[in-house]
Length: 180
Image 1 (spheres, rainbow, N blue to C red):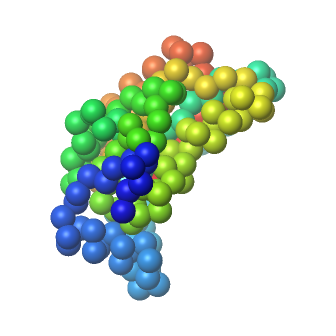
Image 2: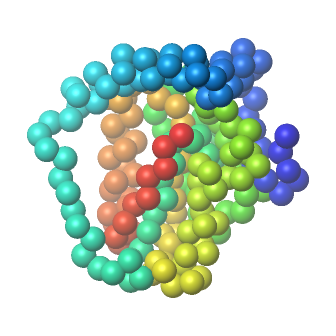
Image 3: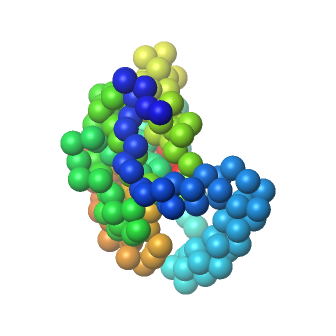
């Protein structure tokens, strides 16, 4: 299913692949997915969210801003260790020059078929490079970040804090968050 110049799929097993396609591509599966996210994810987020979410307005024009990409689609370099498909609280660093053929997707909670045809659906690095070349954005950060599937928001917090620290130290002005 993968083009020669595109990302590769980390095999999740036939049952996981079937379940991801069912959740992603059917009305019943979508309903089950929404129910599961409300039952599992929202209570965790409510416990972790304390107070108001701070809003930070962009202090520069977009054409002067440094942009970083963060995806929860399980994207990583082919040379990296794949994400654990059942639960992985880690992240992977993806350099701004990474090409689609250098990437892989390790995730079982969505149908990755279209993302394997066009990685920009879950990791729009090529579109951001085009915006940089057209001077719509100032520049791309040197490093971008991929996360896999994690059922516990609390266990994910150390990795989120580490990525936030790295982004802050690199002088990034704007983070583009792309959920799976």
